[in-house]
Image 1 (cartoon, helix red, strand yellow):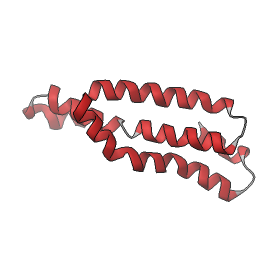
Image 2: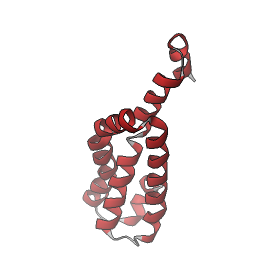
Image 3: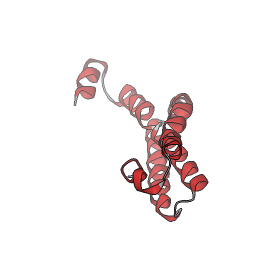
Length: 108
């Protein structure tokens, strides 16, 4: 996990801060488009693609060898992909779960 290893990767606090913010920038920027994608293509397809993208981007981060720009881009990509999780699950619940059971489906 980059958020745990970041202290040993970069010597300056500014570089660490920018790297940690990269994920949240991607997540913030893609939250609304992710909802549109889930409603347009279905939550199951979007969630499957998002899990594949964030898994591959996370795995690829170990090959950057500390290259700041490459790792930054991968962290933004992971944020964009993880932003699809909640909207996709909300779309799936709205389609698959009966109205009377929706609140209890989110409780667990």
